[in-house]
Image (cartoon, rainbow, N blue to C red):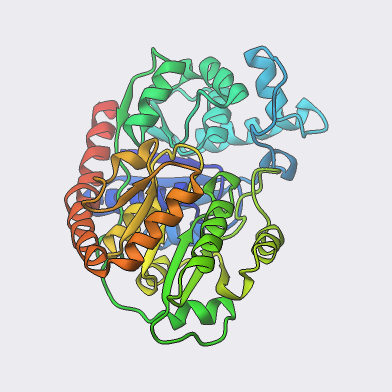
Length: 405
C-alpha cells in the first residue's frame, strides 16, 4: 500500500510532530508500506521525515496563501466563494488554479492508494483536486468556532472518506458541523523513551535565555508553546507577577517557544511579551529561550510545567510530554486537555484564563514538594498506559487497512 501524507507547514509545531509520530510508528510496524509526504513550505519536517525513509516533495505555497488564516474573517460567503475568500491574498484566482493543478499533477504521478491530510489548508486543497482514492482528514482543531473554515469544510467534506479526531472534544465538535462524515478518535502519542524522567540542571535554561546564575534553591517554572495568542503566555506572566510579589522563594519563569507559523495576526511577537514582562516589573525573573527542538531536556530542567491556554485545547501535546518526563503539570482544564489527566492525581487542573487560579496552583506546588513528587510519578505511569507509540501505530494501521481494502 502506498500512503501519501499532506501537510501545510514544515516547521515542527504540534501538528507536525504528531505527524512524525505517525510516520515513525507506521514505518516501525509496517515497513512494507510505501510512504510519501508533500509539504507546502520548507523546514525541519522535511529532513526528519526523509531520515526515516519517507519520500518528500516540496510544493511551495505562495506566501500570500501561506500567511492567510481564518482569524478575523467575518464576511458572509457562500461555501465556494468562502474558499476563494480564504485564498484571497492571490492577485487572481488563476494563482489558486495553478497551485491546485500542480498538486493534482503531483498526486497523479505518485498514484497513492490512500491520502492522509494533516491540516485545514491541505484538506481544502485536496478536496479541490478531488483525488479518486480514500482521503483521511486528520482534524486537530475545533471547527465550529471558525466561521469561514467550518462552512468550507462542510462543502469539501463530500470528498473526504473519513476524519481522525485527536480527542473526543474535537470529534464531537466536528460532528456538529459535518454530521455525515465518519469520525474516529485517535489520541496523539509520544516517544516515551525520548520523553523520560532524566535529570537536567536548570542552568541549561538560564544559558538559553541569557540569564545570570541563580541561587541553587531556585525553582524554575515554564510554559512551552508556540506564540499563538490563545496559548496564554500573557496569563502566565501575570501569574508570575502575582507570585513574585508575594513569595520569598527564589523563582524563575521561562517562556519557551516562538512565532513559528506564517498566519498573520494570530501570534504574539517576542517584543510584545518582553514588553509585558517589563510592564509587570518582572523582566529579571523571566527568560525567553526561543523555539527549542530538543524539548525533552527543557521539561527535565523545569520544576513545574504550566499549560495556560485560554481557549479549549484540541489535545495538549506538551501536557503529555511533560508528564512523560515525570514533571508536575498544571493544565487549563478544557477541551481535549481535560481528557488527558485526572485532577490532583497525575496533574492539576485550573480554569482557562484564570490568572488567580493559575497563580494559586503554582504556589500550592511550590509549597508542597511531596505533592509534586507524587504527581510526577503518577503522570509518567499515565502516559505509559495511554499515550505510547505502540497504541498509536496499531490504531492508525487498522484504519489504513480498513480503507485500503
